[in-house]
Length: 206
Image 1 (spheres, rainbow, N blue to C red):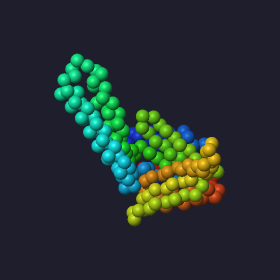
Image 2: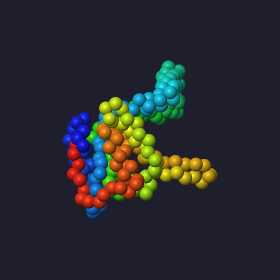
Image 3: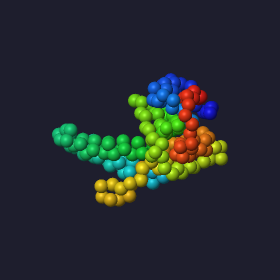
Image 4: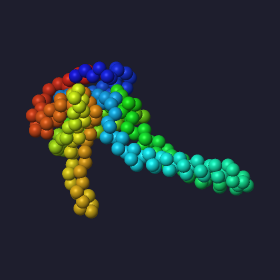
């Protein structure tokens, strides 16, 4: 499968090498997809909370800084500046929440999803290489969202249990967004049913 949106860059080459090291003898690559640089509109729902949070944090920090600068408290020194500085971490958290929907643009070519004959993997490169793995026996029901061009998202249920308080707890593994998401879904269905063949590992395309 070739994804024309993704350039063949250093990060992608590192991920290919990492996958080659990760694969076990005879483990087949049945499907792979590079995360697309697409923004999920659902992520903007966080703005309902992020916008007022950030506005309040900025207002607090600005008002406190103005009060210190023009309030005639020069003799207090650093103690007075503790009030505006207190708001800086909250501004940083707000900025992070506002930028979160745009993370896929930065992750372009840095996240690779793979379905093999034994498991589902996510390989990502940021500061470090991160590899998340779900073995076949933990793959449960999947929910797929597909756009008109065939790209989309998959959410796999990988664990349903109960926490220490006895409350129902569900864990998910997300694949999002990738081109030809139906191919990913089909490979995962075969993996869950034990229908995937064994054989030599397939080469990855860009």
